Image (tube, rainbow, N blue to C red; front, side):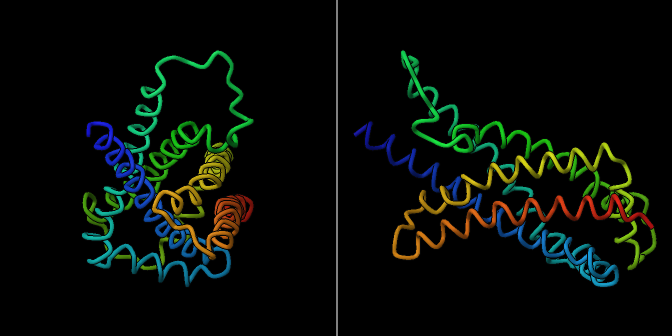
Length: 222
């Protein structure tokens, strides 16, 4: 009975981790779409950013849920890692990890920590600056400021480089995480193979798309 309970709780933790990861992937997709518009149209980016920044539903419901999702996902990741380690207190005499799993899957905690560090920097650069602008300094509403602010953030080659490195590790994290999320929730049917391909495509296109955006604004200062 104890083993059965432990198994169920372990499965529950993995499912919760998977669902929170899929939720964050949805947010990442929206974030990527909005940021990509800055490459093609400053006006479109300003309109979309202003809507996201002043819409009450986004600010006071979706945003807190997002922050809670980020915290939950990373805490659950550490919990699962500790549980996996405690389940094998005695190390193998000889262990060839590369023969059993990809580098991405064996180093999810490493890539996850880098992504977490990136999120802290990203929140500091954009979310905290936005909170200061609206609620601390109580500045006037300026609907055309967003493109200039985004462009300004990527003036520094150091900050731009840090973003690019973080997005590379995000690609590694997504490479394994996207598909493992669907496996954890039991999605295994005739569409699974196509979904795996979609996951690998997403893990490449979105992070490298963010890198392109960062480099675009770095080399196209106005």
